[in-house]
Image (tube, rainbow, N blue to C red; front, side, top):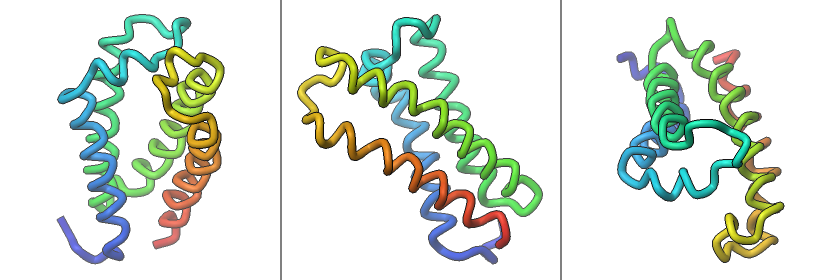
Length: 121
């Protein structure tokens, strides 16, 4: 691994690796928020964890960085489905205030932009 990128790129990589690990530590949290129209919730939670870990690791290597960035942007776009589902279903929201759920939507786009900003680095 080359440490030639800005420290905040490695922070982003660590965030996705840690988020992916939590899919295995606390899968029930993620299974509970999966929209009903998505099949095989448990497998999807584990696979999305694997993908997050792989993308986080991919950010750290020159050869895979740009592909990982596009993967993260795509993953965040797909995760918007979960955020909208939580907004539309009070039971799934599990007591999280509506304002916090709404705030997560622009946060997703901010995370997409953050990832996109490293394409030229």
